[in-house]
Amino acid sequence: MSNHNKMSIYMEKIQHKNIKVNGINMHVAEIGEGPAVLFVHGFPELWYTWRHQMLYISSKGYRAIAPDLRGFGDSEAPPSSTSYTAFHIVGDLVCLLDSLGLDKVFLVGHDWGAIISWYLCLFRPDRIKALVNMSVVYKPRNPSVKPVDLMRHTFGDDFYICRFQEIGWEEEFAKVDTKKLLASSYFQRDPTPPMLSKHFANVFQHAPPYTIPSWFTQQDLDYFASKYHATGFAGPFNYYRCFDLNWELCAAWTGSKIMVPVKFIVGELDLVYSFPGTKEYIHGGGFKEWVPGLQNVVVIEGAAHFINQEKPQEINNHIYDFITKF
Image (cartoon, rainbow, N blue to C red):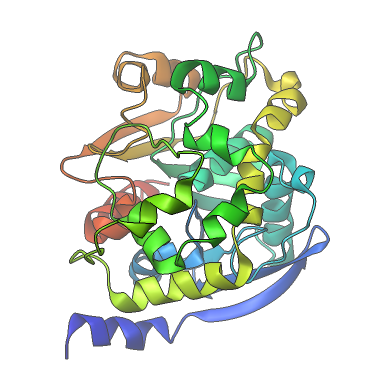
């Protein structure tokens, strides 16, 4: 039996349910019994991004839980952009833990899921045993400049996060075939900051056909694309539109540190790792200063941004090795 067929059989064992949390319906996937591990996905991803980790961790005697965050996949998407602040998303996750009867969990995050995981540890460290976070570092709040202003100053108006601030940008995304759009993100190996021209959709008219790499399958792309085709991108973009609002709302946490045990993993070719000053911050002591519980930093050679899908067994081992210490 091929690995792909084996994977399909195991995937069928994952259970799905919808749970009412914090005023929205949240789709949650879970498998296994034992100490709980909460997986928090990024963009443009879904609970499905954690398929390899869920199957592995559950086989080792843990309960793997992966929701679609609000605005993603089969979870509800409130229409207002201001319904996607860090307080809303963390609130959803705390309510989810409460509804599942879980006092403390291991936490695993990637991309936006990493940002949310940092916030969760900042707001409610009492609920987290330990954190394995990927791609996005914790940076202290800078009280003197709003984040989007800083990004615009550093990268210019074409920087993807600046573009996502524009209302209606989701319509520009909707002009592009969803599979082509997702493939251009998932299989990207250029670590330079992503820039989106004003007429983003036109770029795809002459783009070469994508090639699916060995670590991904057509079935994987079909799943992600079917969900994004159904929901569009307004929900995810609203996370980016709350960058400055989060900055305002979190003024009370200025100077706060992350006080839970942490392992941080990043791909050598991850575009976020290549942002100006990030490597110096991670390896020069700044990161450890703001995350005193930082126990390990792992840089995986030759890996790009979607590291838990590209290098599943390595990531599985890193997660398992870390959480078994607690």
